[in-house]
Each structure stands twice: as C-alpha cells, then as structure tokens.
Length: 494
Image (cartoon, rainbow, N blue to C red; front, side):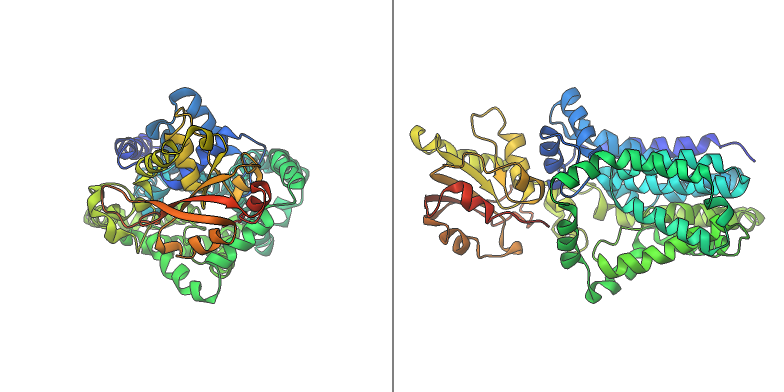
C-alpha cells in the first residue's frame, strides 16, 4: 500500500486556512447562538442533539469567550480532517499518489463541506464521522482483521455523541454488508465489542432522553413534518448534484460503480448503505439535502481510484478536471461561505438561507435592550424576555450578557426544558420573527395578555431580508394567567 501523500495534508491545511480567514465575516449563525446557550446549560443531552457540540462550545467559551473565530475553529479543523480522510480512503482502496491527491482535491472542493465546516454545528463533525467509519470498515474488508471493529466502535460512538444520523449509516452499512455476503465479518466477538463501545458513548444521551420523555422522538416528528413528504423528494434528488463540485459529479458516480463491481462485501455494503439512506432521507427529510453528505467522501475516493489510470494516460485530463473543479467550486462559494459583502447576499436566500441568518443579531439584541431599559425599574424587576425561537434567545443571551437584563427564555426546542424565568412575571417583552415565519404573533399574544403593544421593529443595517427582518418586539402586560402557566402553552419543537 502506498504511503499517504503529504499533499493530502497540505490540501486540508489550505481548506482550514481559508475557512479561518472567512470565519470572522458577518457573525454568528442562529444555530451557533443556540449552541452557546446549550453550552451555558451543559447537560448529557438535548432535545435536538447529543452533547458534543455544546461541550466544544463550552470549551470555546472558557478559552475565548463568545468569539466567532474561537467557536468556528473546531468546525474548520473538522474540515481539514475530512479532506485527509478522503485521501486516506483512496489509499485504503489501493490508490497511489495521484488518486490520493484527486480524492483530497475532490473532497476539498465540495460546497457542502465548505458550508458545514464554516459554521460550528453537528454537520461539520457528522461528515468526517461517516467518512472515518467508512475508512475503518474498508480496512476490515480489505484485511479481514475484525479487530478493527473496536476502532469503528470508537468512531461510531463519538459520531453518536455528535448526531444521531450516523447511527442510520452504521445500521445501513451492516445491513448492506450482510446482503453482500459479509456475514463472517459481522458475526464475531470483535464486532460485538465495537458495538458495545459505541453504546457506551451513547449512554449519556440515552440517559438524558429517558429522563426527558424521549424528547428527540417528537422533535424528529416535527422535523419530518417540516422537511419530509412527497413534495420534497425531487428537491432531495436534485440537491445531491450540489453536494460536490459540479465537475466532480461524474466522479462519485464512477466511484459508486467501482464499489459495486468489487468482490469485497464491505465495499458493496457501502453502496447498499448509500442506496438505503438515499431513499430513506428522501422520504422523511427531503428538504435537508445534506443528510447523506458524508457518503460522498468515500464515493469520490473510490472514483479517484477507479479513474487513476485513465487520468494518468494523458496529463491533460487531470488538468482539465482540476481546473473545471476549481471553477465550478468558485461559482458555488457565494452561496455557502461569506465571500460577498453582506449587503449583496439577499439573492442567496432562496437557495441557501444560512448566510442571511448570520447577520443582524447584535442589532436585535440592542433593540430588545432598549425596550427593557425604557421600563421603570420596578416594572423591570418583574419582567421576562421571551423569544419565539432559539436564535433570538441566543442572541440576547450572548450580546446582552452583563447588561443587567435577565436571560431570555423561549419555548423552542431545548429552551422548553430550561424554564420560564420568573413564573410570576407581570410584564413580558416578546420577540417575534418577521413575516417569513407568519404574521399572527400579535393575535396569539393577545389571547394570553390583556395588553399587547408593538414597541419596536427588528431590522439590520445591511438590508438583508432574513427570518428576523420585519419582526416585532411586543410589550405584553396583564397576563390572563400566571406566566409560569402561560409559558407552557408556548413550548414547541422544530
């Protein structure tokens, strides 16, 4: 087997450097603000995720405070690791220098990798976790040494501590390997030991879920209602063409064919896993087109190995593919990372909302602080700040921390388990999104309070028409029942 080429490490380092150079542009994403509050409420699990991302966010808070760069360094490092895994998988499949470099380059050029590794969140770590699990499984299939299932158990365990979706990949991979005739590789004590290791990593989350009514189940049902259904299948299918650089789409198709034609059960199992999960996620979460993104790392690596000889026959072919990949990747970058001025990104919202949701949060927090400061001192002492979603709550708790304001409360996702603040509050400052999410907030609040008055409008200095643009801050008084009871009616997942 050829050694890992140093160029693979260099390509990963370049990806890391670019991501870090862009990390301070715009600002926190709504999910990152939520993760910071999850870090402040560090637990064994959460409604919508296990503990890994909040734990890393907690470390970042301790080292750097609420810093965008300090938070995103973890995701950028995960991007570097992902590129290296692409090269390592090509090496494990028998690829030499050219195949390894091509696999690393193909991985580095993936728009979905840039999008995921730019932001601190579970997807940034889920993609390399899938790739790492595939790498170890391929090693088992190539060598027949089932002791490697212990390493697979560690990879799967860490992946499960980050996001549950890797569990689907593991089950699909095992099922696919069995379908491909790999019973001997699966039915042994080493595999059982690896499984036990993975379960041990998942125990804290399972314990938390058991103590909180298995909250992930209704959370998953809510996500399925939002993102699944027959109407989203076509969106998911077309979206898979956007996971990698357009110039590289045919490469992963070749990789799929290459793995399927192999005699190794694990390699064919990887094809089965992709097919099973493609159908599953298309049906239940079609709007989330990136749910199988991790599979493209091993498909691209397999394609690089399969095409190695063809590319080597004429050097011009490799240059054409490399330049085409660079050009199509550059064309996609404005949709996934902050390369444009924030005043010029409104057009990206219809394709990818992520960038638009990274601006305007300090202004929202300042608007709420102004409303709270305008209240008489005796009224402020009995006031709660309520937000409709976790991004708004996270922004207030991050940017208004130390101002004397109470921490924001919300009924959204894990906030629904953190309590209503002062249960006897007589005044509620309610923050709601803009018309993109609906316009009935005042009506709903009017059913809970005798007086509801809009006192401020949410905007941002860049004119970005995002989810919060045009939202309102309402001053609500005269609760029709104690706030502690009212708040329970506002709890929701999604």
